[in-house]
Image (cartoon, rainbow, N blue to C red; front, side, top):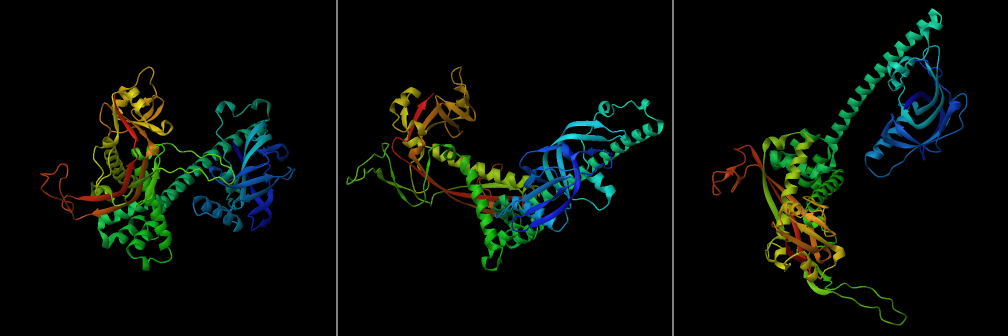
Length: 525
């Protein structure tokens, strides 16, 4: 796609609607002797308004008027976004840049449909389709204006000239050759400028993400405490993520809400969202998160459940409404908690690369998800510490067909849970949709989990599983003695974290579940 650059001739600005009305005049000829005929331009009724020709940075829409010999009239509207976020920042930046004249140019991106060579080495675009209009800064220097904004795609040597120079006078042939040379030099200069600007933009974006990435606020707070303990967490976070970062505001708000300042509420909200994202990651990677039909309930509640499917019925005036009530008595508690103490190197905790934060989050999330799976599939009975496992409630059957015969649940809400190795062994010419990551088996969705014993398969009605997934806590242990550490001398010999340059992170996830009668069948395969 070619681009033609011009200055904005603003006729009017509507502050409340963020509308700009003006003329996008086309340079004729430009510095490399190209000519774009305005009367030959075609366009859609509504065209995207971009920032600096970046298709991933739309800021509004454009409506073009009837082209004239002087240029292409346009009416652009920059979006007005109320919700905080990247889109609002981008659209506000575009609007204020235009209002303050920091951006004083527009550029049409078009695809040429008809061209002809000019004797001076340029190209005449007689017909072209306009696909976007971009807001672009134009330097005051006319020479820089074209060099900075002309960005034609590189043309193969074989297609650069179809003109026979031998038929031209020597002076005109020399001008034509010089024009081609200037064009090539300007293309290289423009490409170098574009790459340099992209590098600057990428660095700025990375720096901004590193400072204000709200997705990792929760884990960053834990890392800051792990490296320095409570007293120095705020100072360390300021040095690592910036004094004005959301992470610092969050740590201040947690440590001393009364002195957190006006940003404390927003920081706590961001931290809560970040913590919820962590919880959702744990849940979604567990069997519970993949089991369709699971009923998520609040803690400390009794829930009426169905032993048999209930359905509404029509009833007439003066007749009591049909009543359906399940068995009363399933009790959920929020005091059950699954936890793990993970030991990581201090080097990983101090690594400033965002990948380190992702790695630490993933380590804790995987450990919690696996723990939930082990308990969910396990054979323990419901007690004060742990919920019951499927191993104690599932009805045993010899094979899959026999299991379906005795299954009393809702097959439309049922899933198969199987070990990845067993899943691979179940593949056959008639069962090709099951893999080590799940898929479909015997027409039912399959969930793969290493918690399931080899050679076993569970058919589970998700609508007969009631689950509560609560909050998560992460504690940092910098000067602790950790027992039963893998690789340690003995389970009874403590390993000091400070002396061994390690950090212990203790993650605890509140969770509970219970099963309605007939929730699962266990079969051998």
